[in-house]
View 1 (cartoon, rainbow over the protein chains, first blue to last red):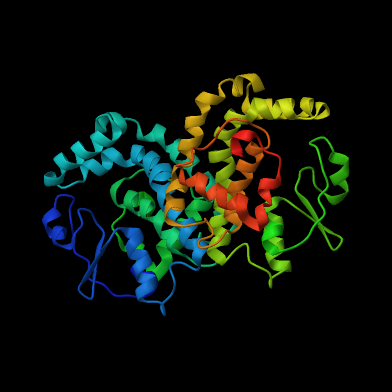
View 2 (tube, rainbow over the protein chains, first blue to last red):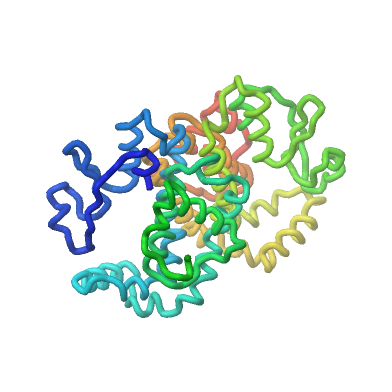
Length: 208
Length: 208
């Protein structure tokens, strides 16, 4: 989404959790990794800041110093406050769709993180849904007042949050948001950006 | 802090919770209320936005559309995520320092909000302290990377957060932050702003 926002074309390479050999030469153990003019940049936040620095004449992902500092806070907040309850909803669907060769790594690393088995953590996705929706409360209030977290148009903070929904969309048939939720309307706008780019990702029928 | 940031002089009027008659003519039941050129503006957020609109040639509280939208999210997040655990730490000290005429209103309204007595909610301030410090985690990470939430200098988001610390400072002798906490260093910078304006508020010796 950040590359589309900048209007930059890129080639994407399909990748799985255990394909560490493919990115090791670039100094990272995790995705995303961006190769630009022979230089490797990794970590989403670092890539976003790099894009605004390297391509200043293209649409900005950050619109000023506060959007960097407050955006960095937001980038820390989303994984804890949003991904954690979302994970309880989507975990077992996600696990079921992993490539066989990734399952052992995923199970071991996530069970260590959660301190329990995947089956325990993801035991009751429907009951976990209200906690996820409640976690969105301060965002919901902002998205009633403003079209995007970036203000009039989308900015990098929108893409930080949107990533979680896109992840769920491709992995889990559970309906995360009701259509009367302001976050639903915001997500529709994100799905419409760049000629419906994010909508092209294969999603479940409930999202259609 | 927002008025100081704008370099605007103002007269402040001491006020208590039950002094509703003093602000009723201005259309508000709560403080702050700003009277500017005969016009009353209330609610901190609305006042901050008004100040940037009415005084655009003075230092900006918001530095772009994203700082409004993401700042509005932050303005919703702080009361729930930060004030709620902080209240468990400072509640009984705060209550003890209220004017006698305010105590009945405060007790009734807050007990309704908490669903329990003040003495139950604030029963164990020392045990509540770790939860408050933990709630600061995503802010702590941002304040390691950036001098202020406003970026290079303070912005309105800094003042949203700082209000909670100033509230505690004047009401409660418990040490909220350890000196090696990045949030402590940030708070020091806020206390130093505008010639040490916020430091002039009477605080407890532990803050000296």
